[in-house]
Image (spheres, helix red, strand yellow):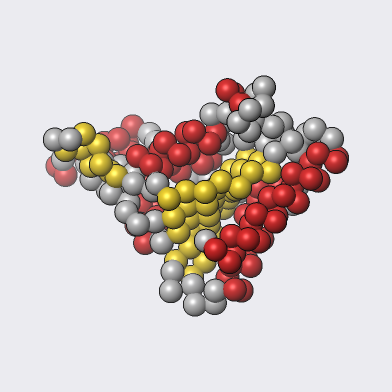
Length: 206
């Protein structure tokens, strides 16, 4: 029995490709694995707070220096970290915004990447504390940024996600990409169908 944490980051509803692919995968996973718990957190429609000065105070100041505002700010982060660590696998839908991830997902990442919680600093440098987890990223973009394409150097989405999740210890990651959504109906249809096929296969092997 596993716990699957599903994150969607698009502010769009039915028109969002990343949201549709991610939610459909999660729903089908729940049907195929009824013993698992599937938890959905909709960051696109219900964003978490950005890091603020009270948050920084709550994370790093001693107890006697805490304020009601700092305690409230870090309490949200503590809840998100606990939820994140309690999951065994992550399914994350990520549209590309300006060559990278949406600010809604970045705000969430800033809430959960915390020293002593999800990473540590020791004599040998940084160490990720989130061990033995899997992550599936379902990404979408208007153009094609795949390796070998002219726009591949502009893809800061996948490298960043690999780096930041690897930083906290999540190195078993896979990407399913639905790109070329703005490159004409045929290109968009072909890419989406390819992503849907890949996700169907992952339902059996992930």
